Amino acid sequence: MLLNKRFSDSQLVDEIKSGNEEALVVMYKSYYAMVKSFILKNNGSEDEVEDVLQDSLIAIWRNVNKKEFSLTVKMSTYLMAIVKNLWFKQLKKKTRFTVVDESLQEKITADDISTDHLDQSVIHQLVAELDETCKKLLSYFYFDGLENKIIAEKMGFANTDTVKSKKYQCFKRLQAAVTSQYNKEDFFN
Image (cartoon, rainbow, N blue to C red; front, side):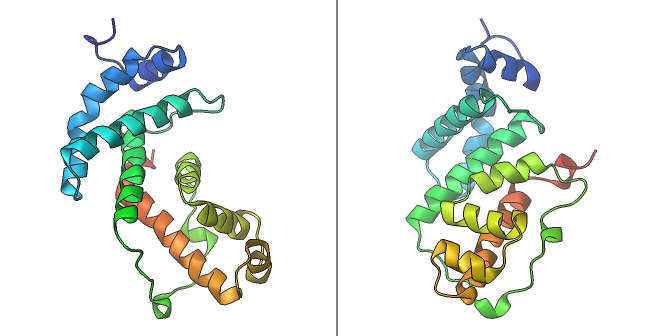
């Protein structure tokens, strides 16, 4: 029985991969206080803590069981990345979307989101958790190298200014997710 033992992150991954659901119970008990603290500090309730933690554990179960899964950060860091993304999505649904002042836009380059030390799997995970529009737009621009005019055509945007504005908003969401969820120690050896 797992419930009375302490497990390393790799042991938890192994237990999940073997189908042992008790690993989720262990994680639930181990990380509940951390998740509760985050949710309550960010305008959440006790009921929302339960929901977000359960949804996060389900996401971990699914992700760990993917063939290509590799845990490259601490389990607590990985869990909190998922918790924060789920919680921020819930908050976004509760509040109105804020329009970004386009006059504050700056030129964003691929160098802004990639460094030699940055763990690319974290970026891929965070991009995957963005809405469909942001996923496509960032992928077209940063990974496929498409010009704004082509992106506007592919995505049905009115013009290149719309692409620029939306790209800026999407990049800022990605940047905020990275900086709010991770410390530089998570990425440097």
